[in-house]
Image 1 (cartoon, rainbow over the protein chains, first blue to last red):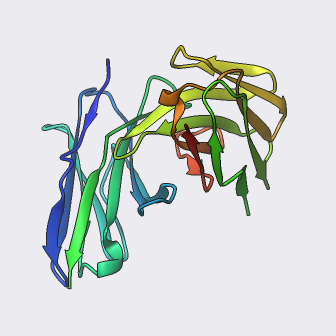
Image 2: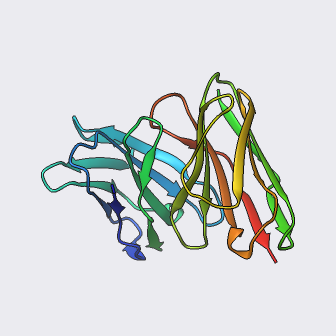
Length: 111
Length: 111
């Protein structure tokens, strides 16, 4: 059974600091990694995804993969109160049709 | 661009009543379609996915069923709702790869 684990939080970060979110996965053969943001009462929205061949930066967001330790990180620079949300990590499953989801980490940015 | 619609947005139903939730996607052809449920404060539970008209895969045995009568339409149904069916129901689509995009969701309360 493939698993994705996240610390449920809440993770509290002061405004302007770097927020670091981690996600561990069980399948060493995983190729695709996704980060979604979910505001309270809303549906998840894709922030970014990376493949096993490298990290990615998009504006204030950076996704990093550590294959040796089997975890993927999401860094949010210059954190804003609007970044307060639950962040969901997902990893590709056995087929291209399926994602394995973590339960999410609640992030709180304190002004 | 692609858009995904779900309705209704909220629903309050008595135990034992039937259910029909609808999801439609615009701007793409032959999408993969998914139904998820998210209980309060929990992660995403995949209920059904479909790779084509009339092709439905069930992930969790329960009193729910899904149908795909048209290429871009996905319906979630139940003949008799249980209290445990309460939750946030999310429809998602993908274009043959893993990246999934979510609709706005339906919040179902069973009383």
